[in-house]
Image (cartoon, rainbow, N blue to C red):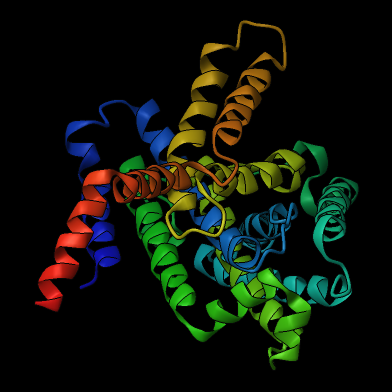
Amino acid sequence: MNATGRRGLIVLLLIASLPFWFIQTNYILSVATLTLIFMTASLGWNVISGFGGQISFGHSIFFGIGAYTTAILQTRYHGNAYLGVLLGVVLAVVVAVLLEWVTMRLRGIYFSLATFALTLVFGILASHFADFTGGDVGITLPLLGNNPGALSFTNKLVYYYVALALASAAFVASWMVLRSRLGLQLRAIQADQDAARACGVRALRVKTTAIAYSAALASLAGSLYLQYVQFIDPNSAFGPTIATQIALIAFVGGAGQLWGPVIGAALLVPLQQLLNSQLSAYPAGFNLVVYAMVVLVVLWIEPRGLMSIRWARLWRARHRKRDTPQSHVEQRAASSRSRA
Protein backbone atom coordinates (compact mmCIF):
# COMPACT_ATOMS: atom_id res chain seq x y z
CA MET A 1 0.00 0.00 0.00
CA ASN A 2 1.44 3.38 -1.00
CA ALA A 3 1.43 6.60 1.04
CA THR A 4 -1.89 7.81 -0.37
CA GLY A 5 -3.54 4.51 0.48
CA ARG A 6 -2.19 4.55 4.02
CA ARG A 7 -3.31 8.13 4.61
CA GLY A 8 -6.72 7.37 3.13
CA LEU A 9 -7.17 4.33 5.35
CA ILE A 10 -6.19 6.30 8.46
CA VAL A 11 -8.62 9.11 7.58
CA LEU A 12 -11.39 6.59 6.84
CA LEU A 13 -10.93 4.87 10.20
CA LEU A 14 -10.84 8.24 11.96
CA ILE A 15 -14.08 9.42 10.34
CA ALA A 16 -15.77 6.07 10.97
CA SER A 17 -14.87 6.33 14.66
CA LEU A 18 -16.23 9.87 15.14
CA PRO A 19 -19.69 8.73 16.39
CA PHE A 20 -18.01 6.87 19.26
CA TRP A 21 -16.10 9.82 20.73
CA PHE A 22 -16.96 13.11 18.99
CA ILE A 23 -20.45 13.07 17.45
CA GLN A 24 -22.65 13.19 20.54
CA THR A 25 -25.66 15.23 19.34
CA ASN A 26 -28.05 15.00 16.40
CA TYR A 27 -26.92 18.45 15.22
CA ILE A 28 -23.27 17.41 14.92
CA LEU A 29 -24.37 14.16 13.25
CA SER A 30 -26.39 16.14 10.71
CA VAL A 31 -23.44 18.45 9.96
CA ALA A 32 -21.09 15.48 9.57
CA THR A 33 -23.49 13.69 7.21
CA LEU A 34 -23.99 16.77 5.03
CA THR A 35 -20.21 17.24 4.95
CA LEU A 36 -19.74 13.76 3.51
CA ILE A 37 -22.55 14.24 0.96
CA PHE A 38 -21.12 17.47 -0.41
CA MET A 39 -17.62 16.00 -0.26
CA THR A 40 -18.83 13.35 -2.72
CA ALA A 41 -20.28 15.96 -5.08
CA SER A 42 -17.10 18.03 -4.92
CA LEU A 43 -14.89 14.99 -5.56
CA GLY A 44 -16.87 14.48 -8.76
CA TRP A 45 -16.52 18.17 -9.67
CA ASN A 46 -12.78 17.93 -9.14
CA VAL A 47 -12.36 15.42 -11.96
CA ILE A 48 -13.64 17.60 -14.80
CA SER A 49 -12.80 20.98 -13.28
CA GLY A 50 -9.77 20.28 -11.09
CA PHE A 51 -7.96 17.68 -13.19
CA GLY A 52 -9.28 18.88 -16.55
CA GLY A 53 -9.43 22.63 -16.00
CA GLN A 54 -13.05 22.93 -17.21
CA ILE A 55 -14.33 25.12 -14.35
CA SER A 56 -18.01 24.31 -13.96
CA PHE A 57 -20.60 26.20 -11.93
CA GLY A 58 -23.37 23.91 -13.09
CA HIS A 59 -22.91 20.74 -11.07
CA SER A 60 -26.09 21.49 -9.17
CA ILE A 61 -27.80 20.37 -12.41
CA PHE A 62 -26.63 16.80 -11.83
CA PHE A 63 -27.15 17.08 -8.07
CA GLY A 64 -30.74 18.20 -8.68
CA ILE A 65 -31.42 15.57 -11.34
CA GLY A 66 -30.43 12.84 -8.89
CA ALA A 67 -32.60 14.31 -6.14
CA TYR A 68 -35.66 15.06 -8.29
CA THR A 69 -35.58 11.75 -10.15
CA THR A 70 -35.60 9.83 -6.89
CA ALA A 71 -38.27 12.07 -5.37
CA ILE A 72 -40.61 11.97 -8.38
CA LEU A 73 -40.29 8.21 -8.78
CA GLN A 74 -41.15 7.67 -5.11
CA THR A 75 -43.98 10.19 -4.76
CA ARG A 76 -45.62 10.18 -8.21
CA TYR A 77 -45.11 6.57 -9.26
CA HIS A 78 -44.52 4.84 -5.90
CA GLY A 79 -41.27 3.38 -7.21
CA ASN A 80 -38.32 2.03 -5.27
CA ALA A 81 -35.74 4.52 -4.00
CA TYR A 82 -32.80 2.44 -5.23
CA LEU A 83 -34.28 2.39 -8.72
CA GLY A 84 -34.65 6.16 -8.47
CA VAL A 85 -30.98 6.52 -7.53
CA LEU A 86 -29.93 4.40 -10.50
CA LEU A 87 -32.26 6.20 -12.91
CA GLY A 88 -31.00 9.56 -11.60
CA VAL A 89 -27.41 8.57 -12.39
CA VAL A 90 -28.38 7.52 -15.92
CA LEU A 91 -30.28 10.76 -16.59
CA ALA A 92 -27.48 12.88 -15.12
CA VAL A 93 -24.88 11.17 -17.33
CA VAL A 94 -27.06 11.66 -20.43
CA VAL A 95 -27.59 15.35 -19.63
CA ALA A 96 -23.86 15.78 -18.90
CA VAL A 97 -22.89 14.31 -22.27
CA LEU A 98 -25.42 16.55 -24.07
CA LEU A 99 -24.17 19.63 -22.22
CA GLU A 100 -20.57 18.81 -23.07
CA TRP A 101 -21.46 18.53 -26.75
CA VAL A 102 -23.38 21.81 -26.63
CA THR A 103 -20.54 23.67 -24.89
CA MET A 104 -17.63 21.82 -26.55
CA ARG A 105 -16.32 24.97 -28.25
CA LEU A 106 -16.35 27.00 -25.04
CA ARG A 107 -13.32 27.31 -22.80
CA GLY A 108 -12.32 29.21 -19.69
CA ILE A 109 -14.71 31.80 -18.35
CA TYR A 110 -17.14 31.21 -21.24
CA PHE A 111 -17.62 27.57 -20.24
CA SER A 112 -18.09 28.60 -16.60
CA LEU A 113 -20.72 31.21 -17.48
CA ALA A 114 -22.55 28.77 -19.75
CA THR A 115 -22.77 26.12 -17.01
CA PHE A 116 -23.94 28.71 -14.47
CA ALA A 117 -26.63 29.94 -16.88
CA LEU A 118 -27.79 26.35 -17.46
CA THR A 119 -28.11 25.91 -13.69
CA LEU A 120 -30.51 28.85 -13.59
CA VAL A 121 -32.45 27.42 -16.55
CA PHE A 122 -32.94 24.08 -14.81
CA GLY A 123 -34.12 25.89 -11.67
CA ILE A 124 -36.67 27.85 -13.68
CA LEU A 125 -37.90 24.68 -15.39
CA ALA A 126 -38.31 22.94 -12.03
CA SER A 127 -40.40 25.87 -10.79
CA HIS A 128 -42.46 26.12 -13.98
CA PHE A 129 -43.56 22.50 -14.28
CA ALA A 130 -45.20 22.49 -10.88
CA ASP A 131 -47.58 19.63 -11.66
CA PHE A 132 -44.60 17.34 -12.11
CA THR A 133 -41.92 18.76 -9.80
CA GLY A 134 -44.03 20.42 -7.13
CA GLY A 135 -42.87 23.87 -8.23
CA ASP A 136 -41.59 26.24 -5.59
CA VAL A 137 -43.39 24.24 -2.92
CA GLY A 138 -41.07 21.32 -3.59
CA ILE A 139 -41.52 17.61 -2.91
CA THR A 140 -41.65 16.01 0.52
CA LEU A 141 -41.02 12.29 0.75
CA PRO A 142 -43.59 10.14 2.55
CA LEU A 143 -42.64 8.95 6.02
CA LEU A 144 -41.80 5.27 5.66
CA GLY A 145 -40.18 4.70 9.04
CA ASN A 146 -37.32 2.23 9.23
CA ASN A 147 -37.46 0.68 5.76
CA PRO A 148 -33.99 -0.22 4.40
CA GLY A 149 -35.60 -1.51 1.20
CA ALA A 150 -36.75 2.04 0.49
CA LEU A 151 -33.50 3.67 1.65
CA SER A 152 -35.32 5.02 4.69
CA PHE A 153 -33.87 4.78 8.21
CA THR A 154 -35.14 6.12 11.51
CA ASN A 155 -31.60 6.00 12.93
CA LYS A 156 -29.79 8.93 11.31
CA LEU A 157 -26.46 7.32 12.09
CA VAL A 158 -27.12 4.88 9.25
CA TYR A 159 -27.21 7.77 6.78
CA TYR A 160 -23.85 8.89 8.14
CA TYR A 161 -22.22 5.58 7.33
CA VAL A 162 -23.95 5.38 3.93
CA ALA A 163 -22.59 8.86 3.15
CA LEU A 164 -19.14 7.77 4.38
CA ALA A 165 -19.22 4.72 2.11
CA LEU A 166 -20.24 6.88 -0.86
CA ALA A 167 -17.54 9.50 -0.16
CA SER A 168 -14.92 6.77 0.24
CA ALA A 169 -15.91 5.19 -3.07
CA ALA A 170 -15.76 8.62 -4.75
CA PHE A 171 -12.29 9.24 -3.30
CA VAL A 172 -10.96 5.86 -4.47
CA ALA A 173 -12.46 6.36 -7.93
CA SER A 174 -10.90 9.85 -8.16
CA TRP A 175 -7.54 8.41 -7.12
CA MET A 176 -7.82 5.78 -9.85
CA VAL A 177 -8.72 8.44 -12.44
CA LEU A 178 -5.76 10.58 -11.36
CA ARG A 179 -3.35 7.67 -11.82
CA SER A 180 -4.88 6.47 -15.09
CA ARG A 181 -4.36 7.47 -18.69
CA LEU A 182 -7.57 9.50 -18.47
CA GLY A 183 -6.10 11.56 -15.64
CA LEU A 184 -2.91 12.18 -17.61
CA GLN A 185 -4.92 13.30 -20.64
CA LEU A 186 -7.07 15.59 -18.48
CA ARG A 187 -3.99 17.28 -17.05
CA ALA A 188 -2.60 17.67 -20.54
CA ILE A 189 -5.84 19.33 -21.66
CA GLN A 190 -5.72 21.61 -18.63
CA ALA A 191 -2.16 22.68 -19.46
CA ASP A 192 -2.76 23.30 -23.18
CA GLN A 193 -5.68 21.77 -25.03
CA ASP A 194 -4.32 22.58 -28.48
CA ALA A 195 -0.95 21.02 -27.68
CA ALA A 196 -2.70 17.97 -26.20
CA ARG A 197 -4.68 17.53 -29.41
CA ALA A 198 -1.50 17.83 -31.44
CA CYS A 199 -0.07 14.97 -29.35
CA GLY A 200 -3.02 12.74 -30.18
CA VAL A 201 -5.34 13.40 -27.22
CA ARG A 202 -8.98 13.27 -28.28
CA ALA A 203 -10.05 16.21 -26.16
CA LEU A 204 -13.82 15.98 -26.67
CA ARG A 205 -13.89 12.28 -25.88
CA VAL A 206 -11.74 12.73 -22.77
CA LYS A 207 -13.81 15.65 -21.45
CA THR A 208 -17.06 13.82 -22.17
CA THR A 209 -15.87 10.78 -20.20
CA ALA A 210 -14.74 12.98 -17.32
CA ILE A 211 -17.97 14.98 -17.10
CA ALA A 212 -20.04 11.79 -17.26
CA TYR A 213 -18.13 10.40 -14.27
CA SER A 214 -18.44 13.76 -12.53
CA ALA A 215 -22.19 13.92 -13.14
CA ALA A 216 -22.71 10.39 -11.79
CA LEU A 217 -21.11 11.28 -8.45
CA ALA A 218 -23.04 14.54 -8.17
CA SER A 219 -26.28 12.67 -8.92
CA LEU A 220 -25.55 10.07 -6.22
CA ALA A 221 -24.87 12.86 -3.74
CA GLY A 222 -28.16 14.54 -4.68
CA SER A 223 -30.15 11.33 -4.24
CA LEU A 224 -28.63 10.68 -0.82
CA TYR A 225 -29.22 14.31 0.18
CA LEU A 226 -32.91 13.91 -0.67
CA GLN A 227 -33.23 10.70 1.32
CA TYR A 228 -31.56 12.34 4.29
CA VAL A 229 -33.47 15.64 4.45
CA GLN A 230 -36.69 14.13 2.98
CA PHE A 231 -37.40 17.28 0.98
CA ILE A 232 -36.27 18.98 -2.21
CA ASP A 233 -37.23 22.17 -4.04
CA PRO A 234 -35.76 24.08 -7.02
CA ASN A 235 -33.56 26.29 -4.85
CA SER A 236 -32.04 23.46 -2.80
CA ALA A 237 -31.52 21.29 -5.91
CA PHE A 238 -30.66 23.54 -8.86
CA GLY A 239 -30.02 26.83 -7.09
CA PRO A 240 -26.81 28.83 -7.59
CA THR A 241 -26.01 28.34 -3.90
CA ILE A 242 -25.57 24.59 -4.36
CA ALA A 243 -23.64 25.07 -7.61
CA THR A 244 -21.27 27.55 -6.01
CA GLN A 245 -20.82 25.50 -2.85
CA ILE A 246 -19.77 22.37 -4.73
CA ALA A 247 -17.12 24.35 -6.59
CA LEU A 248 -15.94 26.39 -3.59
CA ILE A 249 -15.30 23.25 -1.53
CA ALA A 250 -12.73 22.11 -4.08
CA PHE A 251 -11.28 25.59 -4.61
CA VAL A 252 -10.71 26.18 -0.90
CA GLY A 253 -9.28 22.71 -0.34
CA GLY A 254 -7.23 22.71 -3.52
CA ALA A 255 -8.76 22.19 -6.96
CA GLY A 256 -6.93 19.56 -8.98
CA GLN A 257 -5.52 17.86 -5.90
CA LEU A 258 -6.87 14.54 -4.68
CA TRP A 259 -7.33 15.63 -1.07
CA GLY A 260 -8.60 19.11 -1.96
CA PRO A 261 -12.36 18.38 -1.83
CA VAL A 262 -11.90 16.38 1.37
CA ILE A 263 -10.17 19.26 3.18
CA GLY A 264 -12.51 21.86 1.67
CA ALA A 265 -15.66 19.99 2.71
CA ALA A 266 -14.31 19.44 6.23
CA LEU A 267 -13.92 23.22 6.59
CA LEU A 268 -16.71 24.85 4.60
CA VAL A 269 -19.76 22.66 5.25
CA PRO A 270 -19.46 22.77 9.08
CA LEU A 271 -18.67 26.49 8.83
CA GLN A 272 -21.79 27.13 6.75
CA GLN A 273 -24.02 25.14 9.10
CA LEU A 274 -22.53 26.86 12.14
CA LEU A 275 -23.04 30.33 10.68
CA ASN A 276 -26.62 29.49 9.66
CA SER A 277 -27.48 28.47 13.23
CA GLN A 278 -25.49 31.05 15.19
CA LEU A 279 -26.22 34.12 13.04
CA SER A 280 -29.90 33.46 12.38
CA ALA A 281 -30.88 36.41 14.60
CA TYR A 282 -28.83 38.85 12.52
CA PRO A 283 -30.12 40.55 9.34
CA ALA A 284 -30.75 38.20 6.43
CA GLY A 285 -27.61 37.48 4.46
CA PHE A 286 -25.16 38.36 7.24
CA ASN A 287 -24.13 34.71 7.57
CA LEU A 288 -23.31 34.66 3.85
CA VAL A 289 -21.14 37.74 4.25
CA VAL A 290 -19.10 36.08 7.00
CA TYR A 291 -18.89 32.88 4.98
CA ALA A 292 -17.65 34.77 1.92
CA MET A 293 -15.05 36.60 4.00
CA VAL A 294 -13.63 33.31 5.29
CA VAL A 295 -13.41 31.95 1.74
CA LEU A 296 -11.73 35.13 0.50
CA VAL A 297 -9.17 35.06 3.32
CA VAL A 298 -8.24 31.45 2.58
CA LEU A 299 -7.89 32.12 -1.15
CA TRP A 300 -5.94 35.33 -0.46
CA ILE A 301 -3.46 33.41 1.69
CA GLU A 302 -3.10 30.65 -0.91
CA PRO A 303 -5.06 30.91 -4.18
CA ARG A 304 -4.35 27.24 -4.90
CA GLY A 305 -6.17 26.12 -1.74
CA LEU A 306 -5.36 24.80 1.70
CA MET A 307 -3.52 21.73 0.42
CA SER A 308 -0.93 23.95 -1.27
CA ILE A 309 -0.09 25.81 1.92
CA ARG A 310 1.56 22.79 3.48
CA TRP A 311 3.43 21.82 0.34
CA ALA A 312 4.56 25.40 -0.24
CA ARG A 313 6.00 25.60 3.26
CA LEU A 314 7.81 22.28 2.86
CA TRP A 315 9.20 23.40 -0.49
CA ARG A 316 10.43 26.71 0.91
CA ALA A 317 11.95 25.02 3.96
CA ARG A 318 13.75 22.48 1.77
CA HIS A 319 15.19 25.19 -0.45
CA ARG A 320 16.23 27.37 2.48
CA LYS A 321 18.08 24.41 3.93
CA ARG A 322 19.68 23.70 0.57
CA ASP A 323 20.87 27.31 0.26
CA THR A 324 22.47 27.57 3.73
CA PRO A 325 26.30 27.64 3.95
CA GLN A 326 26.23 24.43 5.98
CA SER A 327 24.45 22.66 3.16
CA HIS A 328 27.10 23.80 0.69
CA VAL A 329 29.86 22.54 2.97
CA GLU A 330 28.12 19.18 3.31
CA GLN A 331 27.71 18.96 -0.45
CA ARG A 332 31.41 19.67 -1.05
CA ALA A 333 32.38 17.10 1.61
CA ALA A 334 30.14 14.49 0.01
CA SER A 335 31.64 15.30 -3.38
CA SER A 336 35.18 14.89 -2.01
CA ARG A 337 34.30 11.53 -0.47
CA SER A 338 32.81 10.30 -3.73
CA ARG A 339 35.97 11.27 -5.66
CA ALA A 340 38.13 9.54 -3.06
